[in-house]
Length: 452
Image (cartoon, rainbow, N blue to C red):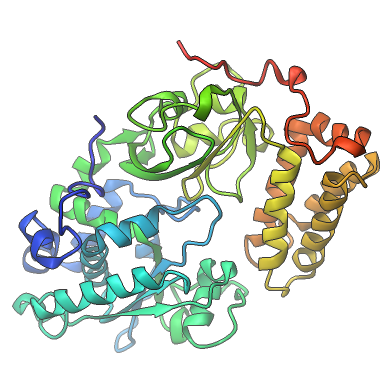
């Protein structure tokens, strides 16, 4: 059984309460940090751990913290990005629901390291149950002396506030989140300046994902060097994966980075294989915004090596034959799923969620939505396939924030790996909305029903 760090005691009755969480060793990281460590030492431990941002970008967390400007007499802020909006991703919601105090403890440790006396948890507006759970956890922590003035007699003061968003995907981008937190429309900012210099209220700010902040708790408890022993290479520690789609056992799993993708999919400890005894056709490994890979490429690299659940291994081969870890939204598609319909579904989402600030994204996502609609509904032309590739190229890299890239990559990769499926829809307009259109031409890419 893989070692559980963030999900340890997750099934313990009452673990969502301060009393039970404390009995299981909770808030010991706060005691250790505030009583025996300086803020700089906490930052160094996080650097030593090799922890990388778990929200999608994978940037080293300790390095991000070290960029924070620290002018004298100027307030600094920590903002937790709990605006989990990526299709296919639900691990942050699960953690906040079942074990909210690990996030509150991580917020205290991280705020102390950054010298922040006011911190915010920005939660997606639809997650009202989680908002109430977090507010209760904050109240419990404060009632027990872990928040407020002079925490544990250390002289350190901290207040944490929960802020519900308006349900906009774009507010998962850190600068759009900050705009929303300030009460403005959630449009991404042009950078520089970066939030580390001019973030919330134009003050130095760090924005981190829920899982990234929660991971600081075991890092401080066990030490950064001990945490770095888990994982593989520069992909250290564990990672929460939201497994969905056509797997037999969907859910949230904590894996040690470096686990073979094949083991994650087919092991009874994790996904338990593909549901209903079907074959694996393709996988979106990191949420809807990362390139899709056919079964043969998600299980092995082009060199024939086993593909691993790590930042480096998933990206091996670039976007021609690789993908990204992203936010860990692992969506598996069985042999009967239509790639064209799935791609159109993702594109409709990005078209709807574009803030409209950048014309390549505003207009391009609309074009892709309409063209994919035509192909899916038997109205497409062969030239439409190349048009989609061209539009995606004109969006990628030409927008203020990464939403443009997130919209372009799924379309480009779907056509790259499944072009004949798009052509089939054009050639068979009367049958183009059927789901199972015959997959003999995918025999080499499809996984066997039963794995050795």
